[in-house]
Image (cartoon, rainbow, N blue to C red):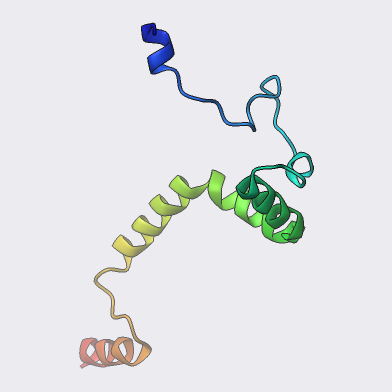
Length: 93
């Protein structure tokens, strides 16, 4: 066995189709139960949820960074409304 054969990884069936994205419809009747189950789940997922999932998958790094900045900005402030009122009363006198 050559080095290229030992190092090669089997390609996903989603990639084998001429490097085009395969649609979930193509896998509904697949002999692999995992692929068939994933295709059925994709079929039953409402479009709005699918769009949200795609958005958050694409933007996950930016959203994580934004959350870290938000947490850093409000790190010193009290978390609960009554704590904020107490802090304001102490500042006023």
